Length: 129
Image (cartoon, rainbow, N blue to C red; front, top):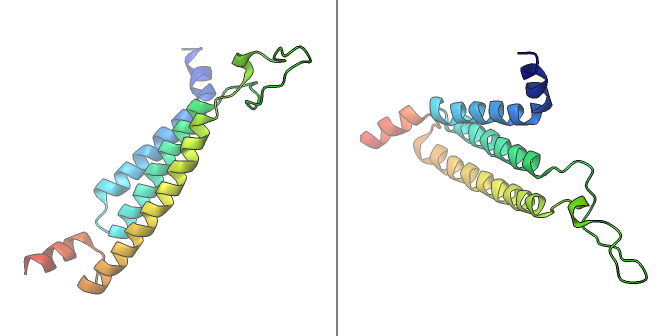
């Protein structure tokens, strides 16, 4: 039991991502207000981004710019470099997330104009009539 607490504290970023993931999932499933569902979706996306950034971290690593000596030998070992691919993918995911949010808000605005509300129950009742 003594080694469990330091293990949990050492992985705080994964626990934060997990908490955000469940908050976003709860917001998307349990709420009837469509704006709250969109906010839950954004929180869910943020949790996934935090998780992938946490995976891509390599302590003590340097940027992947290889420098060579005069006799064409690399100065550092390849294991000392950080992989830039996870960070590039996260930047792409952030752009996609912002675009998704913009489309969702535009659709929400149209739903509010047509139905006069953004409550899911009232919209479904309006569609049944």
